[in-house]
Amino acid sequence: MVLKDYNFNELRTQLIAETKKKISESVHDDTIISQAINTISELDRVCNILAKRLREWYGLYNPELSHDIFDHIEFTKQILELNNNNSEMGGVFNSKDLEQIKELAEKLKGLYDEKDSIVDYIRIKMGSFCPHILEVCGPLIGAKLLAHKGHLRDLAFMPSSTIQILGAEKALFRHLKFNAKSPKYGYLLQHQDVAKAKNKGKAARQLANKISLAAKLDYFKKESVDEDKE
Image (cartoon, rainbow, N blue to C red):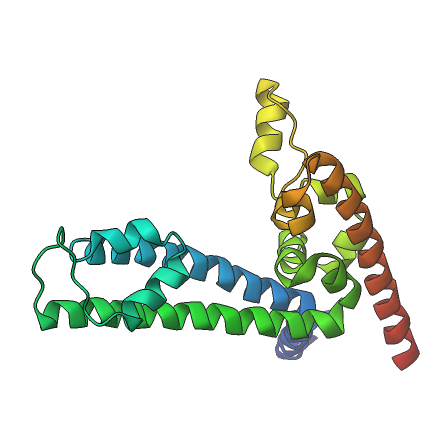
């Protein structure tokens, strides 16, 4: 073939069209869920920083409240509900000082509300995409597992022993390099059954087995549905 006779413009157009198609096909429900749970992680980080700042700031005015209420969300609500109740140990704040603190508390409450909204969205999204995983471990842990591996297929073909320690990579690295104690759980520690168990390693192993089965059920059921559509 003579190069001058070849239509490079047509080839370029075909390559661009194929690239666009592959990019479009790479976006699935599990990638959308991953973005949502990563957003929650960022919100948690921001909320914790702002909540600590709010505690220090308001603590100058009413130090007792910060010691009485440990939960950041409840502490924020209390600031918005209190009617400028000063304490004997607190400093003297004028109305503008308190107004600024309450404005920060209001914005922080908005971030907490936004997080709750995204959690509800993830729950709905997982209910249609991977209902068995949702039922076994809930929206937050399930979404973190999906985000960690990227796709439902990867989670479905993963052994339960690996699922058990997802999220504990740093501890696993210390175990392999420095002969430290091997991790027995990662994200699964956040599950109430594991957190409350006396033998957390055993509880995490049992939960990982259930998640492994749930992921396979969700993935192969989805594959079957996609084949029927074709």
